[in-house]
Length: 423
Image (cartoon, rainbow, N blue to C red; front, side, top):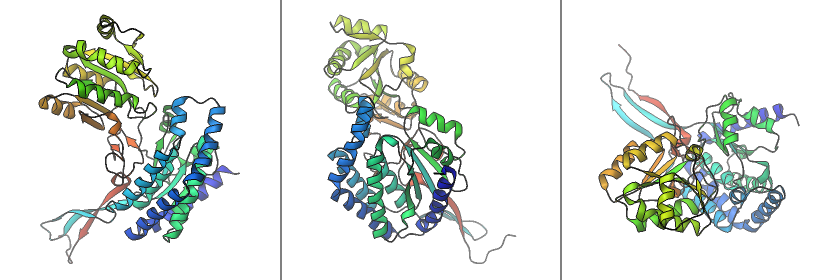
């Protein structure tokens, strides 16, 4: 296969399809989404069989538990994909919406219209659900998509791509609107991220090494996040019952996700009561605790052992594993400073019953999602009511946080006149 020719052809077809998608009716887009949802539901067993073959290969290659977790397509994951497709279909279509119309002294009206970005390239690794989420959001927002999944999910992604094609065909939309790169050759990624004549934006969904490579090599703008170093700060005015449940969920609900808590900060004023309770909950689930000297002293006084001394590196590490860094801080100011210094601007939470402190945390923590008395695991397009997400951005330009339909659109100025000319 000539990768350069293959990817150029893929890009050219995507650009043509994007023009058809930009003028597609809401009814046609929704019909396609519903048809894909029906197909995924109908072919559930076949999808799980394909995923089983991917999982068997991954285990043979010795991939770790976090990788296997991301790769697994469970019944619950399939249910979520189907519901996500139907939620996206039910969402208001943003394309063509005109906002902010104002009369100018000249007599013209000036406003902005929401339009598709065009062609979106999505590069992802071991999450087969991304194939559906990305296709759904790109389709509803009037874009064309080029999907390049990881070789480890080849069987499942191929099966899902066929079902997407079925849905597009049923709705009379071009099947080239969603194309899956059919080669695992890394050169295909290198070509995709430099095809500025065909691709308008790249969305990487993968590990740090993938995104670091794309940041160096891509000539196409990206919507991305590099790390998910998420914090929960337990304030000295926290409800300990809430704190225990929230922190446990934030860390142990799933270990291999970007919105999992990696560092726990506890206010000094409540550490003696809170830390032993939290530590026992984590150790019951075999989470390794890496603690600063003050946290070690508090825990050892409560007869809790099995601790590991934290290093400076731990404060800036995304473990994606049953490992948690714990630090005692003097209060809200120190917590905010620590998060803004060591965090990745992804998702951070405070547990407190003090409204003023909660509002300060929301204002001053420089992250894409900031939460009060809730688990960081809620930082997710599906949970935020976006239907699905194409990714989470901790950048500040174009899109920030979970990226749903509006994040895949742009605004252009429109002018409505009645024959006015400039004087």
